[in-house]
Amino acid sequence: MSTFDHATLIHGINESLSTFRKAQPDAMRGFAQLAQASMAEGALGSKTKELIALAIGVTQRCSGCIGFHVKALQKLGATRAEVEEMLAVCVYMGGGPALMYTAEALKAWDDMAAAAA
Image 1 (cartoon, rainbow, N blue to C red):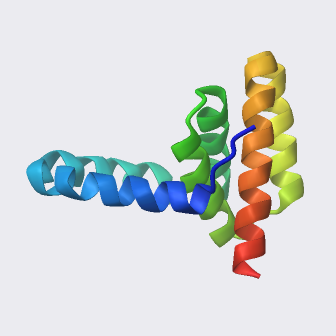
Image 2 (cartoon, rainbow, N blue to C red):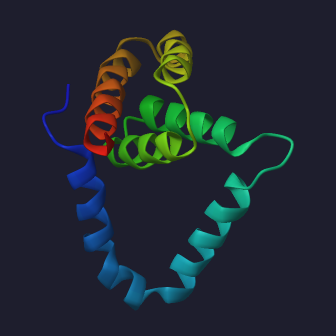
């Protein structure tokens, strides 16, 4: 399980990418537009899309993705039970490695929820 603070991790990622945003503004604008279009309400709601994004972050073993998408899910009003159910599917599809990142995602959820309270 991770020993880092996901809120600090995503803050650090944003800071580290600030010079890249300046150096590659067109690419970063394109990425931001892709993210916004992909996550917009449609046939699937934003919360469902964020659950999918977190599932991908868990199964691809991306700690930064876990932090960003847990934060987004909390803003969208997702419950821990919804996240746990999605994580069960991650473990089913991703086996032991997904289980390890499930623990990380739950720690991120709890830490960020406590910080917001």
